[in-house]
Amino acid sequence: MDMRPIGVFDSGLGGLTAVRALRQILPEEQLIYFGDTARVPYGGRSRETILKYARQDVRFLRSFDLKAILIACGTVTTTSLETLQAENPLPIVGVVEPTCRRALLVTKNKKVGIIATLASIRSGAYEAVLRRLDPSVEVLGKPCPLFVPLVENGRFRPGDVVIETVAREYLEPLKAAGIDTLILGCTHYPLLTEIIRDVMGPEVTLVSAGEESAFELKRLLKAGGLRAEEGAHCGGADFYVSDQPEDFERIASVFLQENIRYAARRIDIDQY
Image (tube, rainbow, N blue to C red; front, side, top):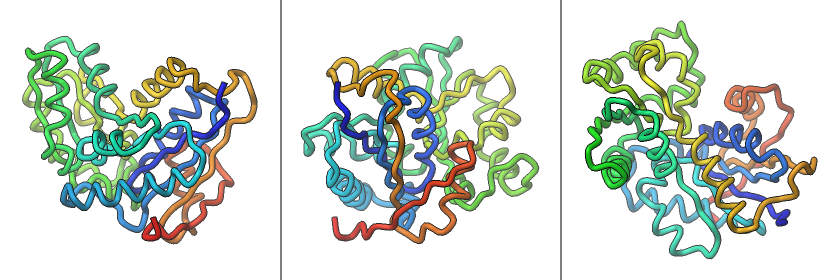
């Protein structure tokens, strides 16, 4: 039994969808979330800059006595996961491999689509893992650079002509290609589930990176004897951001899909 907290980070607040999944899957665990809201999005930046930011994010989280870290960011996972794992003596879980395993489990025609940030698609990480696990799979990737800033600015609800127009432009080529499974390769994207499903149709299965990584972390903690006491009522979450936190309660309520009264504390990430 290990009562130390789990660290979770993302380039902004999209990783709160992974926090929501963790709270459902591991309700007894204490979470510490950092959203790098001052530098969101990471997806259009160079690999070197993303790694620099990710190292700072990890150093901040490790100022707490953590037992594990979940990288709730597809961009960091696809560009920096192996480096971060090599540099830090604690379990670090990314979103790519668990998501790819799930996608291969549910696809019937072995045509899998991936939507993610530009950096994630450029990295080829999702495609490489899918092909390693199943060389016969056909993979179609599509960068969706406008999704993260639109979601961060609250433009994700059905009926919003801006996000619906952007979604059709990104997604219709994937639908026309005949995929039957679509990986949501960024933890912001679950908030777009309804819009994405409207474009893709019910015959396409959506696989969420944040949810699958939460299940992977649960398996890892159990295997390592790192679970908190199951059934204990000590689970909770503390939230930190790198920019002004005034709107955090409103935005976090959307991502977590519950009315919250949590306050986020601002930290100077450049100190790390």
